Image (cartoon, rainbow, N blue to C red):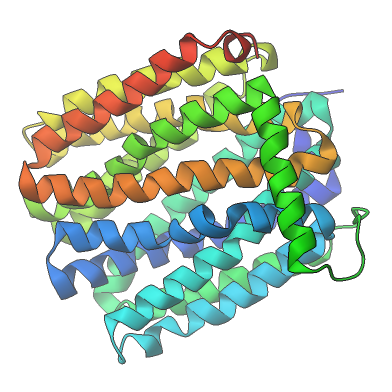
Length: 400
């Protein structure tokens, strides 16, 4: 059986899932650029930028394990279709909500993030069933390749689209891509066998979510992996806030500058996705930990970059480093977690990483206003490096 990067596309159901997500990510990137510019133009505040980014993480921190329990109960294909349709409706309402007030845009962003809690664990839980263990590293890498390539296409349109037609059009496009994704997923033939075909009380779901937490706590590899990854995500999330501050504030480069930095890191993500696909599954944990160390070192250099142009190659390298811990993380969870616990294990990844991402987003914005951009970047770079070093001290994780 071929296990190269493109091999999973030989599976019709995975190919349908891949096509849907490729289209959807294009719209998401256009939406992201438009929303970031909208908030900065309305507030001019780095802290508000951090709050805007943090809003998308709050639902995972609060409800992620409950969503994971439902994902393990439901048919994963139907879960993704429903999530896409609901998100399309929510995103479509953003242009009208802007006229009411920024607070309503934040509320809709919160709702979109809540619905997404069901989509992502369902997708990642379904991938092993569609491609098998031999193609798992390739499938996750290809998923990242398509996301990065789609983001580049989105970026190619984002700056000019927002400048020429306004940010409202961006949200209409994003809604359309969600609906197209739902159509592709609808054609997937594979069906999971849900453990419960009927509804369950909230007590049953809460009990299963609690069982998922206990399962992770008792599984050394998952426990150590999630703790290290979550701590590292504090610094990685902060880097997103820094991108906005660097482009829009320090170098006053506006939408084109923001798009150029985003494009640089996205090209890096694309290259990194191809590269990490060649990594061995047996060395996934060490790949992850070294990826975090390299990411931290590169961001130290970013802190002292003298111009926007000098940042572009650095963000390209940061994108590559990002894939060397993102893809192995998903592969380890998919491989170690029992199939009936996979949704909850992947949801736990979201809960921990996104809860601390909130700290990173808001903390970065706060520190920038209190200490300055250079000092703030150095602090969060240290957090990422410390998380990786702790990971190297955990024997179960090193051996995973």
